Amino acid sequence: MNFDIRDILLTIPGILIGFSFHEYAHAQAAVWLGDDTPKHQGRLTLSPMAHIDPIGFLMIVIARFGWAKPVEVNPYNFKNRRRDDILVSLAGPMMNLFLAFFFLLLMKAFTFAPPSLISDNLFNTIMEVFDNTVWMNIVLFVFNLLPIPPLDGSHILFGLLNLKEHPIYDQLYSAGKIILMMMIISRTTGNIIGPPIGMIYGQLAGLFF
Image 1 (cartoon, rainbow, N blue to C red):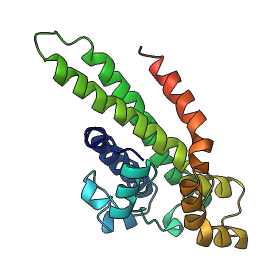
Image 2 (tube, rainbow, N blue to C red; image 1 turned 180 degrees about the vertical axis):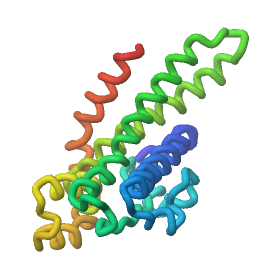
Image 3 (tube, rainbow, N blue to C red; image 1 turned 180 degrees about the horizontal axis):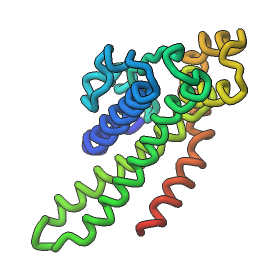
């Protein structure tokens, strides 16, 4: 595996933004829907320090697949437990999709900056950071929608099927991290999510460029 320190450094802002906003979105959605657990645990913040898991952060820097500290919620505090749990699970990935759109918009806005305002090298560096942030947020959007516990996609799918109370969900949940790690190591995950990531990136970029 080839490690380029410059590429890693230019990717880190996108990782921190993507993780922090993703987990904040879960926390804020839970609070809005009646569960103050994330607020009491200090997760209702955009500070990366509240959300970053050191190993998960290292994994995404090195392997492009990682994780943050999951936001804990108590679904029994929701008015509509099944519906609201699905909405809280959706909040994180949808935030990442919004961020991808937002940073593409910033990239487009920067193309109108007068040449005298910013040097070519700085312009190119900023655009690369923004582009990495777009890409990373699309990765987080697609990856987190995989229907494998503990990813958001599993909460959404099993919630829609009304199977979260079924023993099969508990069995999958206990094995989920091992399954994900094996998929990442074998590059199965990349083969699965690579095409939709490329398609979404192309579709969003096509709106601006």
